[in-house]
Amino acid sequence: RVQCMGKTHVACSLLDSPETPSMTVNRFVYKHILSGSYKGWIVLDEMSLCELSLWAFLYRLIDTCKFICVGSWDQLPPVGGHQWLDTQIGDDCVEKSRMFHSLCGGNRVTLKTCKRSDSTLYDWYVSLCPGGSRYETDFDQVLAEAREFFSGSHTPRWTLCIDHSLRRKINREANLREKNQDAVFVRVPKSHCANAPQDFWLYPGQTLMAHVQVSKAVKNGMFYQVRRILDDIVEFEGIKLPLKFVAKNMRMVHALTIQSSQGRTLPGPVEIISKHPRFTRKHLMICLSRATLASLVQVR
Image 1 (cartoon, rainbow, N blue to C red):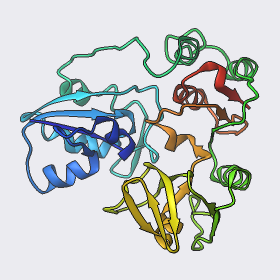
Image 2 (image 1 turned 90 degrees about the vertical axis):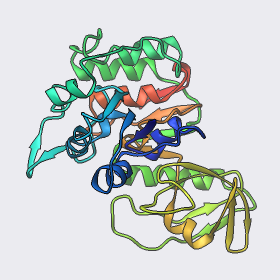
Image 3 (image 1 turned 180 degrees about the vertical axis):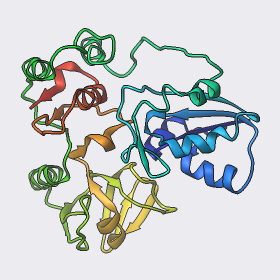
């Protein structure tokens, strides 16, 4: 018996198969730990995104389960960091814990062949990790090198940034640029949260990302391409959704926040916006590792 899971639906989709359907870690905890039991193998992907409280729940299964934990601690930590009893814990608290060592049986396998990107790009972002040639270099110097090396002029298919205000601005400009004659204007419900939806032009061929809490129709964080628009119904591949649902729960994907890009592969030109006070070495590494070709990456 094998259960594959990840923190996000994006990670789960990479593990999913008819023989071993995957689920999110949160769902697994509620279904098998808080409301049941489990015995067998557990494959956990994107482990760096799991907060300490989830690890504590998983540790309850150490006597009944075998764990395979997949991912890199060099990626970004959970959005809210690690907290225990209202105390903020360091980002490396799980990586250096006896708990994690016990879950993995003290075993570690390091994969050194990259299947996502070309060797030039791979060597560049690996140099930013601990032990890499640029890890100890001053970050301002590293960023200057990156902007000079990745200075392509392709029109970006994807733009990665930190703040939502810039994400919305880039999405709005790209949406106006790429809409066609069949486009329908969608006015979204007003919201004051940072990740609020925005008015946009909807057209066949457009790719949208689901942003939902609970839905049987779509999965949070997954991409869906518009096939047809029929009055108040939007047809995607294999599903039909009311236009009101699309307006409230779907987002444009010309620009993505760096946090939401984790677990994805982004083919085509990728633009990285690095001019932000919170932009770090880890952010640069994550952004570069989403792309597939060094020649298609632009660091701004």
